[in-house]
Figure 1 (cartoon, rainbow, N blue to C red):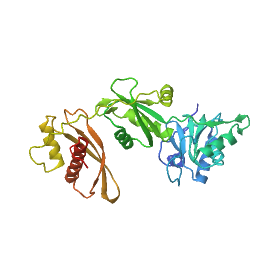
Figure 2: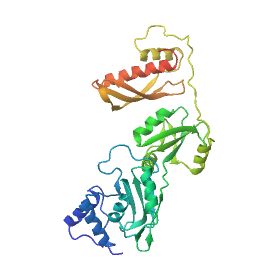
Figure 3: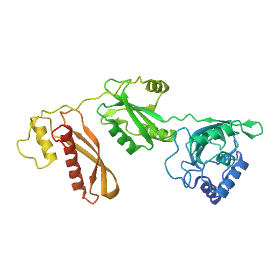
Figure 4: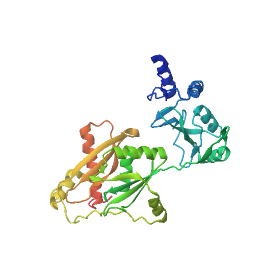
Length: 354
């Protein structure tokens, strides 16, 4: 294979910017299919289309310019196969846009700059995807080349196994929402592999969102609340059990009840102090608070996450809440959040009734 460097830096940079919008490294440093590559660059310039090359695929959109609202639902992506290797987006995108609005188009690429013979097109709706399958299935894109067009098999569900039993569904949703995007639903079941652990089935709103979430979770520290867990695509055998209702309900540890006749010996000036006195009285150990402020909402509301461990209680108290006061100094914010959390724990224990 013959490789050629561009004659000068300016020419190379011009072509790099045209292809990637200045975002990604330029890898077309060879003369394979040069005529069609030049035609692609001219089409991109005339149509103001930007393509970005990432991890062996070249992508348009996701979302496209001017897109407003959520990403299209599952089922709106099609698979395109049997493509001639020298064909590019200047032919493919106009063809598939003729059916309806594209949200995303991904062409799989070789290092030499040829396509790998297949691509994915995601439309703005399932209805348009159905039309593309009907109208472009067996379309002769070049003499002797009839393309294959069918529904894409979009993996969108991850299995997180080995989760602690005290991790509740709404808390897990919050944790995943903070570190991944596109979470659609979260369901908890007893772990099929480990006693006294749970498994979560997490469904994302697209294959891409699920793949990015899997990458993020696998590259991160796979420990949550001190418990290691595994991340993988939801296997077909597990999906069948899910569909037939053969997965067991999640394991759980009930919060132990404190004796209701235990009262502080002296009035407590705050909920934090009251909880401290109660824990001292029944020898549970002092509460340990972890509070993390996450985001600011409208009208000065601050969202925060909390985790409180009472050593001999066994099950941490955890969740999310909101605090009014965006102009509070950090110390005041932390103390007010602790007070709110202590009040909530006292209510859960039954010592405060609304």
